[in-house]
Amino acid sequence: MRQAVEIVGIANLLLFALAAVVAVRQWRSNPSNKAGLWAGLAFVALAFVVVVGALIPEDPDRLIEHVAQRIDIAVLVLFPYLLYRFTTAFQPPTARLERFLAVMTAVLLVFTFVLPYYPGEGEARPWWFGLYLALFLLHWTILLVTVAVRLWRAGRGQPSVARRRMRTLALAAILITVALFMAAAGPDSDSWLALGVGILSTFSALSFLLGLAQPWFLRLLWRRPEQAQLQLAITGLMTATTPREVAGQVLPPLARMVGARRAAIYDADGNVIASHNAVPTEDSDTTTVDFAAGRLVVQTTAFTPYFGDEEHKLLASVASLTGVALDRARLFAQEREAREALERADELKTQFIALAAHELRTPVTTIYGFAETIRRRGHELAPGQRAEMETQLYEQIDRLRVLVGQLLDLSRLEADAVPIQPERLFVGNRLREIVAGAVPANESDVRVDADPGLEATVDAAALERIVSNLLVNAFRYGSPPVVVRAGAAAAGLSIVVEDSGPGVAPEFVPQLFERFARAGSDGLGTGLGWRSPARTRAPIGASWSTGP
Image: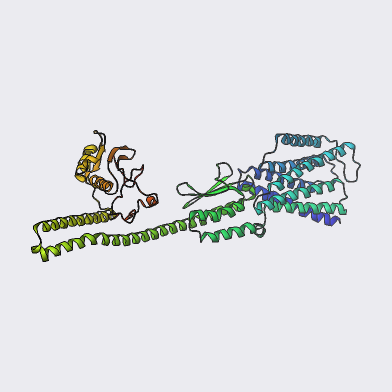
């Protein structure tokens, strides 16, 4: 039995020493993490207790041995407090609890050094030692139960790996407390109870080790639920066609994997594409991962940097895949827009050809009929009839000239080949000249409202063409009187042509800016220019602006 106890003791010594090495290495990998510092101190203290305890004789008789024994017990007193401080690095306790535990630890440390002596194995225990032992057990119980409860509760809502690590540490704290209570009973070193204490300590050491660091296969096993969800999400990224679909595929499983309370994906301009729960706020628990098409921002809990360090590293990989998916969605959107633009262009071309053929056919047919009549029967016509036909022939030729001019203007606009020659001029005077030329017979029905001193730099020919077109539409489809207003605007110059007609039908409003669109079956014209402005606040084609 003694041999078994010794073997278990050696195993415990190695396991607790290994736990100390692992805890210190984790702290050194991230020295700014306070939780890692407290964990390193706690497990170094526990390893010190085990190693020194193995070196001290069962019945020390020299001064140095007694001093080493008291220091060893004092460090054992500190271990649960250090482990408790490890948990407070994530979530601060109440001030009252903090003071109570600190005072209790300090009192027990003083008690440790003022005891007259420590009874050896088989010796009688004085009342003061019994009191000390009771305080010692109470101290351990309060601290390690507090540690276990805090870690267990903190595991709720955490990713699988972090939750299992926390609860494994909580289990280790309970096991070592039970082992301590069994050891306090003072079993013989070769008894079954001593072996049970050693085995419980072994399970506690293994649990501490698994809570601190796990084999890769165990992590994979623990992470399997989130890993499966993330793999499905990554597969879904390949079918996402919009940035919002990409974010919707990746954010929920990613948040579950790293324990993110909030997460968001931003585009290259800093705009939020989508978020999980809410847009993250800037604080110490926010992690940002940049990628080509934007950045990924996650806001985790205070436990994540220590318990979810490996999951945190996965963010870079997921962010890279998200960037690729966003680029793919962007290219898909560009391709779709280009295809839609081509379809619209093809539809416009078809409409244009049909409309141009329809509009040109009437004057061409009329011109042909008049010309053929004059050629064949001109000598039979009375002078009045011939003159009337020549007049109508001229009107149809002029109409054809206007239609061809509109077609040429449209082609230049499509090719961005309209020459612009800006010049400084008085806007009011120029508008009156345009009105006189566009509607000479109805000039009294048009009022120009413009400040005489208003000047602007504009292309006079373009201004004349635009305003003339608006005036013709106003008289053709609207009703007089017509008002032409000009004034300074935020963008430069604003010109408004407003008639007193019935206005545009509400059902036609969505088509106001569609090329070749005409309201009603009786609408005249090609649809190449602006439609009739109604007396509304925002008539189609009723305003035009140029630079100052």
